[in-house]
Length: 467
Ligand code: ADP
Ligand code: GLC
Image 1 (cartoon, rainbow, N blue to C red):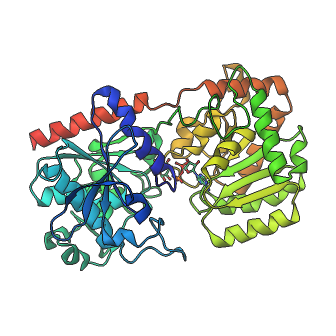
Image 2 (image 1 turned 90 degrees about the horizontal axis):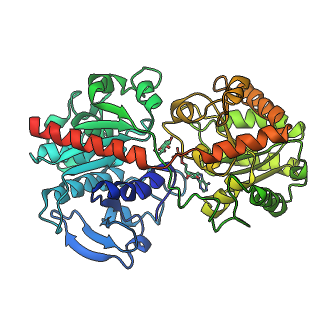
């Protein structure tokens, strides 16, 4: 419905994964464009011009939309305008989202009352704060997907959105002289989670805490890392409608067909070379994802005869540098800018290696999709990459296999070395086939993580009873 990255995948898949556990999870999303609201049913008007709640049909669980004037003008761009600037209406819009969640929790608005609010990232950070301000007993869990984005606004924002001034305090929402919406979640939610066990450790440190490590250390007993799952129905090479033909661990012919389709579609003549892995990238072009490291490494890889398909969008300077490189190497490098779900599926299926030189990666889903399609990820041992990429070094291969190639650190040199190491394996087809099969058989589904969230909901309810 609206997806810019992994948060969309998580919020899309987790509710259905909770259903078998007897949890009636419902989703509240902003209606980021009139198109999203079209066809949805009006349920209720919120007080104080807070917008209206609509209900969409079609999902396996109820999805509520907050239709509010401050979201409506965004034309389907949730976070930034066409120039890449954050929307001026952000504070009012996301304050309204948090408030709407708290009003829903009160139970008087629609014919349903949640026991627990599960809030994601700064955009929903004010919901736990509103619960506290309103004296409601609803429990809350706050999940950190990306701590780099804090939702900071000038101090007068509290009065503007109708929150009390006592929240302007370091023990509450104040953050280096601003008001940070994310602190509403970090300080007031009963339980905190982030999306991998390794990242739960990283954010407690000065290097990985984005200035919020102190706040998190104070609440470390409430913080857990729960690895994201993947929707194994949407991401299934045996039934994926975006592939030329299906394939699975026991029949990899369809994977070669997907590779051929990519080579054909982008005129990547050099991609026909079976002596080099076809490289890929499906990610936002940002500092987090190590776009600059890719730009430092890619010219050398292309000189060496490698080919690559890149799908991404974000940094404008990176896009133009990549465009120039693609113009120099048309038979080796294909670049696509924009958001293209169908092409993402084809790339995961048709490539041999997925490059993910992230500086930090709370979880990362791309590497898990790649694995499910027999494409080996390359990334540094940070966050969810450390928890899911088990290096296919010689020892691991002797002991049963790995799931990808770990970079020594997050540097251009380490990226190049890892690709070269992967190539040495790629040149041994029986070994590579075994790697592909093994990695496709790994279970990255939601079941275990849904149980872990259910446990957090239970604990949050317990905390509320004890409070
Ligand atoms: P993040 O949430 O930090 O962007 P993740 O790896 O968790 O990183 O999730 C990224 C998701 O967005 C994946 O589903 C990936 O396939 C998708 N994605 C990223 N860029 C694009 C793009 N340009 N077109 C289509 N899908 C994309
Ligand atoms: C964030 C993180 C990514 C994570 C995703 C979903 O966007 O950058 O690592 O997988 O959220 O949790």
